[in-house]
Image (cartoon, rainbow, N blue to C red; front, side, top):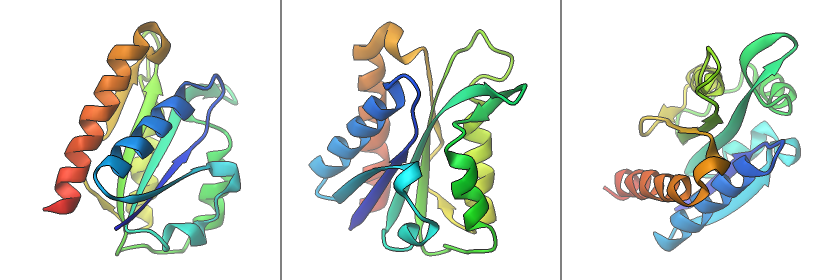
Length: 153
């Protein structure tokens, strides 16, 4: 089984979370590739059995709870394409002091629904990744282990 982990990051925390997902999936014997969303095309999605989308939430263009701006052109270019045979999962990093905590997750889940993809597990929302990097890395690993279990069942 082949997996793609797609991320965008400002501070590096989402990249660290995505790297943890990649390593954990590899431990479960999935051939796993990690790519920045700016280097990913919608056509890439169809080449994998499972795609994990990772994004922080930000205030973008005056709107709180938006996903990383690099996802916007990627999502625009995917409009009208369908990936019903692809399994998806979402990791969102955020800050609970904002009104829309991990709002990027809702945007990515809608994107997956628009692609007719299969959301495999409940999306992971991480609060303040760097404030407890060790604990939050473990949360990502535990979540990824659950995802791998679903994929292998």
